[in-house]
Length: 113
Image (cartoon, rainbow, N blue to C red):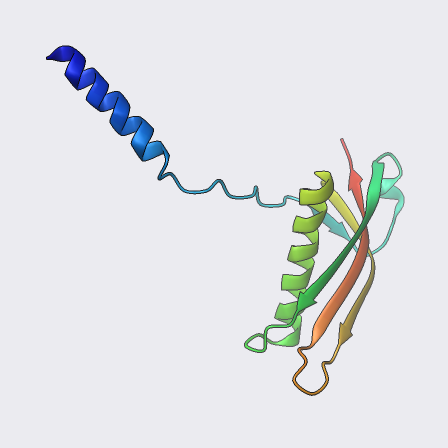
């Protein structure tokens, strides 16, 4: 009887593990810089990061820019495991007829100790 309980418990754990939620991405802990500066001199330059962000009409322009920056930082972390990001260029482009406004960003990802 004891072995049936152990097998039942083990089977339940295996079955429930198949229902576990998907592992989510680690949130980016990336320091942003408005330009390449001396504080990045001792860091490893990892590569260029480019992002396109579709503007959310329910948010004002500043909040959209903050969301775009957060998306860019997440991309730098996901692609390079960067902990610093220097923004090179950010451009807000108004959409045309039935086209959304967009924010285009470029930056350089760095890994600093």
